[in-house]
Amino acid sequence: MRFGRNGGVQHPRLVAVETTNHCNAKCVFCPNNALARDKGPMADDLFEKIIEDCREFPLQAIEPFIQGDPFSDPKILPRLELIRRRLADTKLRLYTNGYGMSPKKTDAMHHLGIDHLFISINTLDPKKYRDVMGIPIEPTIRNIDYLSQPGKRERIANKITLRMTRLADTTVQEQDDFLRYCRDKGVKPFIVGLFN
Image (cartoon, rainbow, N blue to C red; front, side):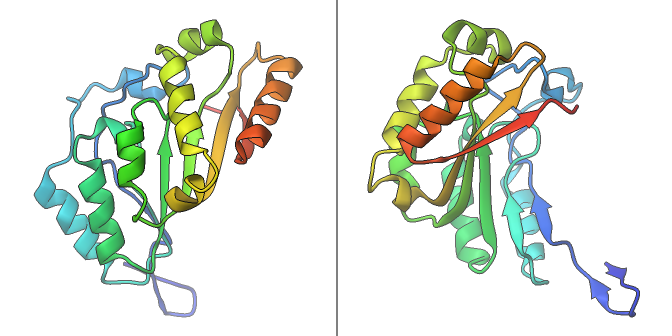
């Protein structure tokens, strides 16, 4: 706990929880590939303690993500349910590469009230996608197609954003294709430059 300039207690506005540091992708720009520590999911008792500790102050947002992809955590759905149940007034934001977000998992997310879902896709070119992310694009595209169906996307999250990381060789055409794809899917686009 910290004290502000006026003597009042300051609380974190955002808590990021690494439920797993395992990721199904191997993105060329991601520090996850260099982690020296063992990879795997967080222990249940630690996760539950963090969520309970977050109830002690007015938390604006929580993100169950730091290094790994949340859908690489075999317990992500019950963990999201616990967050929503115990932190009902806290914004729940979820970041994923979408690869492990199968239709079955998507359907299980209907009642979770996710405030913002971010999916990193980085490029729509299949070869470049595999080169950049180390996984095939087809499962991710199928998952996004399923998730973005009218009537379904509104039940999954209040906002859905597809994210593209612009690399040194990203073309204007790739960016235009990405923007068009997002528009066709009815989701928000976000293009960011590589900064790490």
